[in-house]
Image (cartoon, rainbow, N blue to C red; front, side, top):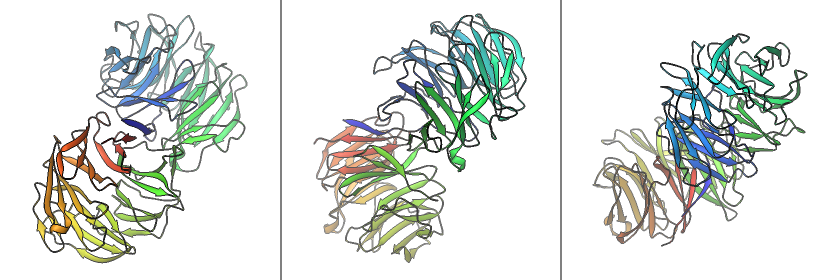
Length: 591
């Protein structure tokens, strides 16, 4: 059975606002990553629920004011309306109101009408009845895609939109009819939001300005902060429950808390100096002020200490490529590396994420292992091997080895040995220095392993290659590893077969394991040396038993719609898996 350990962060894109939804009771918040909608408990964000039924990338999700349903929209223009009260999240209705990416969704206060905007081919928005899809007006008046929509939560209803054409639009209804254009911004308008009491609405733009309008007649009231609200573009705003204040998130890496009546900033929260500290989303939920950085990190702001958030939820927002487990003082930590070069540290005891400080990899982390010197050894598409001291939790500027070609795999053994398998080249290193290079190979190497004894290195590609002899495999090798005691070598190939070899018997074939329906991806030995796990493009994970190929445990669809990209064992009964859905899951295995 599984226990989710690490929930993916919001998927972020530079210069693109991120909508965070909140539930009407104030207990949960929700956001999207890939094809998933992620619902998290605001008090304890480790409690999470993940909705995985979209076939395309989900861009926005919003609770109905009743709290019973969520409407989520994706990149194809599809809106799914689903039940929040049951674990199965039964689909209630499905519509395709526009033929392109959905950017924002808004409900009327009676939970009966939905407005959807985005980048459609024929139109940029629609407003319809939730239970029939019948139109209840027209969202018109814009020449470019619409970024944001909101509906006044009081009668008489009003609807407002914000667009890349530098304008906002104001509508009355239902049926909703265009009334006039709001022409105050000079660049893209990123966000529009009505106050909870309906008396005001605001627009926020890439020009750094926030304008306040009358919620009933749409007339401009004032601008926040005089000439400019922020030095950078404003991506999101969120009102306080009592409608007197709001927070704004900006590319200038700050969030400001505004007294709307006075038009002045009460507090400025500085979230950092790095590009990844740009603020692209925010949510005011009860007493919680949440913002989202470009890194995907979720910040809980502290009104009394604007320089330091109360907490920051870290983790991965990009697909995870690899992971490994290391025990420090007997406590297990999961290290995982992602598509953008980020390395995350997850404590299984404290259930807390952290990361190394300083400058690390600048591109995808392809493989990682830990060595006897308490170092995390990683290889990356930035053409480097890195050795990072686990006890210091910061990257070393000196312990980086530049490779001639891009490394795809790294393995280690006692005595300071590392084996890097690169495109067209194999490099053996001792104490972080090259001692041996194999190139001009007549095959493309994919993966390597060093025997725990440190005497033999094995490289897999189109065939298994030893330094002295080669052994034919069923297909091209995709991953391999020695058992911890060095008795067996296990390999998987692109013909869907897993094979174990007996080391002491000249690497004779011990067993062949069949079960995967597609190309195999990753392999990891259990500490008991009797079992190993494999994953494949068929979304399956199998746990195999040495000497008994028919005795297998199958984990189907472990990371819904995503294959498992990495496997590691915490102990002989605990397996962790990771995937391109940017999450890590823990499984308890009973033989």
